[in-house]
Image (cartoon, rainbow over all chains, first blue to last red; front, side, top):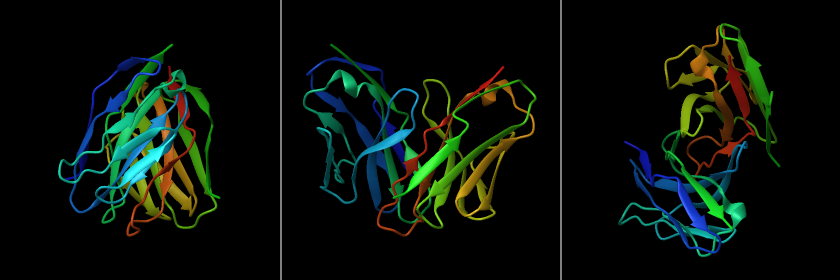
Length: 112
Length: 115
């Protein structure tokens, strides 16, 4: 079946620290992969995406590479800011179905 | 451009009362529509999705129901709310399956508190 396993949180980092949030997946068919961000009290916003193996999605200093050999899509940022404090969701979709599959979310808090 | 609206933004309801949450999408035709619930500090739970008018798929048995009376309108309802229905309700849309990728676009959410 299709599923996403995401690194457990919460994660607390100091400003300018390096961030990695791990995400691995299982999929029937050929998935597209996504990272969403949810700020407090808001809906989810698409952060970045990758649609085929070895693609790198990037946005706002965040990046993730679609690794088919390890079925992973880890989120990274070189220097986090307080404004990056949010919940991050890894997700996949397959073009043979109509559903999205989300990880459980990882809460990130960045302290000054 | 496409936009998605949800209302109300917040709602406080007594146990046993009815519920109606509305979601509308603008700027696209024949979208897939989704209702999710997010309990406090938890992940997303898919409740319903719809691939067309009058077509509803339920993912979790519960006292909630969904309807799609128009192409771009999706309604979440309950006849009698339970305490466990409290949460953050998110509506989302996507293009139909078959496109190379079908990312989902989320509304701002409705915070429901059942007392």
